[in-house]
Image (cartoon, rainbow, N blue to C red; front, side):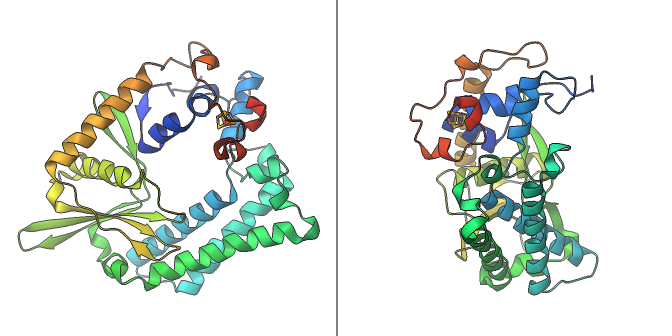
Length: 313
Ligand code: SF4
């Protein structure tokens, strides 16, 4: 057995998952545990395989994130790729992912190759006959083009595009901090610091390739806590932005010490709720029934969920 241990941790996305469907939360964080190991029971291996699936909107989003991070890294090495190069790189990854999924490369290595839920469930949008798949793929190629174009065009991103790479603080790296005795995972897409007359200003950017969601501002507040723990930043030094690349919109958010304290309390409450159901997946299988399915089998959640076959939906 590897040195990995099954321990409780928290992240904004894990909390959102917990809130949207407890059964999916069970599959993601408990049922799939050790499913990567060929000696694991078949149900865990199946759950892991389903967990590793993605969908075209997520794959397109990942391609944009990866291409922007690569562009930033290139700047740090003295090379500035053009918008066209960044776009083509991202679309190339989208095409590769689509082919890997369609041709089944993931069967041997689910963690390494793309596996689309659209292919797995034979969804009509991805039928090759009648041009549906081409139309569907074209939608996400266009999305990538618009997102990259806005990254280079938005006035509000001028500083992000031109800041001295020596000032970079974070670039798509997963980091952890500790709150209320548990690990909290964060992945700020991009963070920098710039000197000001009275100290420094920290800017944190979250690239979004989909529509705004209610939870987006909360995620930014978690980054302020991350900045406090990692870079010893006071809340008033930090400005956060959600950048809705497809629509070319950018929010500018500040959080004062009081709001940060409330966010910390909210996280502690969320952890408490999750800990009440937590068990060690190395010591037992748990009872999935204590993580109920959402009631409406026709819900949008179920219609796009990776675990439809386990729930019979
Ligand atoms: S199929 Fe529906 S009930 Fe089952 S895990 Fe997914 S969202 Fe939850």
